Amino acid sequence: MNSTTRGFAGRPRAARPGLPPGQYDAGDDWPVLSAEVTPDLAPADWTFRIGGLVTEPRTWDWEQAHALPASAYSGDIHCVTGWSKFGVRFGGVSLDAFLDAVRPLPSATHAVAYAHTGYTTNLPLADLTGGRAWIVWEYDGQPLAPEHGGPARLLVPHLYFWKSAKWIANLELLDHDEPGFWEQNGYHPRGNPWQEQRYSGD
Ligand SMILES: Nc1nc2c(c(=O)[nH]1)N[C@H]1C(S)=C(S)[C@@H](COP(=O)(O)O)O[C@H]1N2
Ligand SMILES: [Mo]
Image (cartoon, rainbow, N blue to C red; front, side):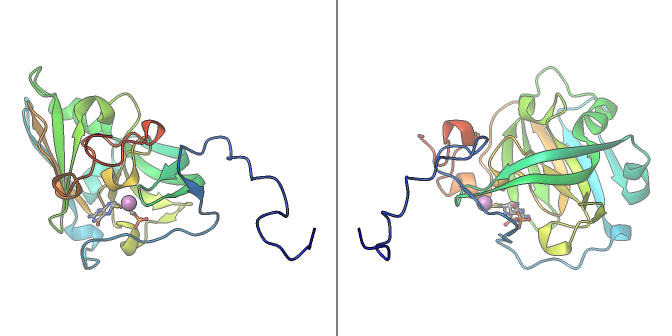
């Protein structure tokens, strides 16, 4: 067979273990996906609030958030546009630490995350607890770059990456699901990459 014929040079590449269905490995690339212009948000101007169905709504500034126990995520992230990135390292604080302080009411079942820019995304509260969600401000030991959501973003790596709101401002706890920006535009309310929940109805 002609060695220049493309597509017959080898067997189909086996999907990398850990790669959800329909995803590809982006390697060293880290694409920037933003619906907004990157805001000029200094750490001193950053705040994070949890309100809604909680016993004690609370706002943290940069210093107060950093006083909580540090927690890191090492693992993979998966964007609904198809790229996955393996072995990323984020540093920040577990969302459990913030939620413990505000004490969600038993009626709270869902949350809407709001960015300082107005971007929104909705999540089941259960996906934000149990050590599976973070507020992060470091990537690879360095301050999180502004285009990637710095000074601080939400990180929910077990769901598609659109749930990880950049420039996170607040979480509003609700007793029902309320679609956010992409979810109002046809994306799935939960977005589990392992079940390929890309679009509503998937
Ligand atoms: N505020 C905000 N957060 C956002 C987005 C956005 O447009 N605005 N895009 C989402 C999407 S679709 C993805 S894939 C990731 C992209 O993060 P990155 O630009 O750091 O790769 O952020 C998510 N969080
Ligand atoms: Mo995305």
